[in-house]
Length: 255
Image 1 (cartoon, rainbow, N blue to C red):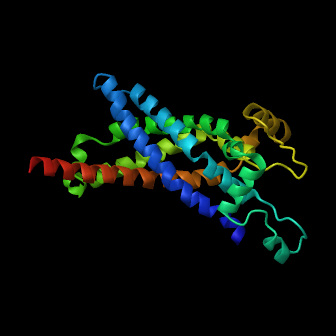
Image 2: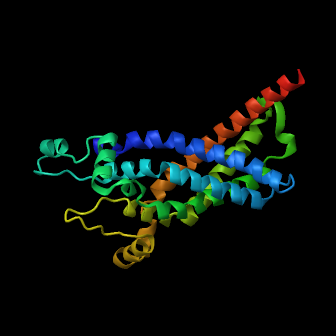
Image 3: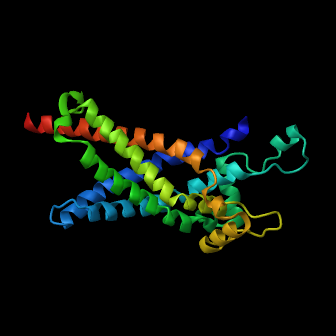
């Protein structure tokens, strides 16, 4: 059963800073680029803001995801007996894995798969742009009500959740192959020290050649089952906090 929870620690540690950095950078970037665009919030502003947020987030958190991937993919070393194999895992925990990578591969080892991570910025960009577009279409002015959360009616919040879920679904389906490539690039070297995947293009060609194009979409169903509900809940919380604190600030300003 422990095998299903490999890498849970760094995943939990990574999600909080990654989401915080992404939302913070996007929100403030949107304000900045809107001001530079003479106060007009356009799809171009959303595009630049989302791309900036994606690049900053990927650069800051890539080491966390490298450690998570190594912990998930590590194989037992030594004798094949189950009790010995568990005790002989190469990495004891996240810290031990990080120290091993730094010792054996240097600081560059923590940035394996960075090229694929930057390619994945397209997913966040598509997601934010789609979300902003759907949010404006699905949340009409009459959806605002004093009886809702943060001054917005139940219908308005349903529109928010739906927009977030659809935006993530569209973005994930379009850009999913980068998830596969990124995971392959973060794999540890083989026993002889040779790395099977050495770069973005090389990995893409090799996977397609050995396993077929369909391999680039392996595990997509499970991925969508995880990320779509996750995005819907996350964006709901984000909007609820913005509306709640935004309304409170307005009331304090008026009083």
